[in-house]
Image (cartoon, rainbow, N blue to C red):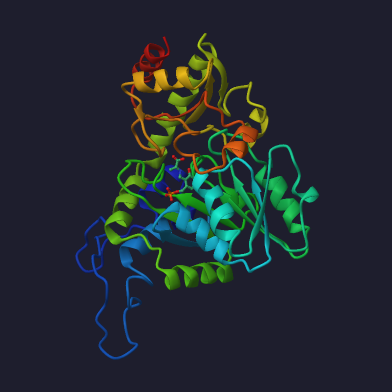
Length: 383
Ligand code: P1T
């Protein structure tokens, strides 16, 4: 039934049903590691909470529904999801990834999986075609869109269509953390798997670390569940419950995030202390037209280059009051990040430089506060 509802209704109802034993409208927190069996192997669908837990299952159903997918997995973090996808590969396999990704994603590819024989080529998928870089063993195309932190927009449909013509077809995985299913639906555009750091917008309250994977392909779901069950990267019932609760307000929160972000991006674009603003909703963004098609609403992340260097950036970051200087994003409160020193520090300095993650680059996660308070805080810290 829920897959027929509109998004604003889905976020409230998906995955959640009255508890059959009490009628409780909210899914209970099933804080249990195991389940009693009347006879060996006979149970009510649950035997051990690493394999399945009812609170987690409600969350998995909710996220799958929002993404227009059939199967969901709720994980211990977004990085667990990336790791599970990489566990699908074999020694000698090759990955093509967008070059501008979260620092932790890049770190997994470069420092962990390279050691285990999976080689990754990082390219600018917003301007370069994977066709030039494909190898006989290319098994995975990794997309993050908008990218973190430079907010490049990747044409999901175009890349999925290219992938579908390859033999064998590489998996296309889209990290939908920045956009959320509120404004972007990668499975409908042809992606095989969607990844989330539920730490961010889906939970929305900066009090959980979690992740999720969604797919429509049963065999892929079964493989990923097998990997999760074998290695144990699960969301616990308390965190699952918090994310379920957070999701109920995702649609209203995203409306506030994106309206505030558009206003802040326009304000910064006209500011004399700013060199350049990157926001997919600005006509000056190089993929603005694609963003209008693929993710109407443009999201709550704004990135900008200050005039000057590290000194100017440091002064600004120490002066903000309402914006908190902290890693992460997607919570109701506004955060500011210095990618080169904070979220993307694990990327080698030379690579960061080539990407354009410079010392004067600042990333904002725009919260749902009053936009005039946010503007005043930025203006005061800039001047
Ligand atoms: O932190 P974790 O829940 O493991 O999620 C990792 C992750 C995956 N994908 C994207 C696009 C992300 O931004 C992140 C985490 N990012 C931050 C902590 C950050 O401040 O950018």
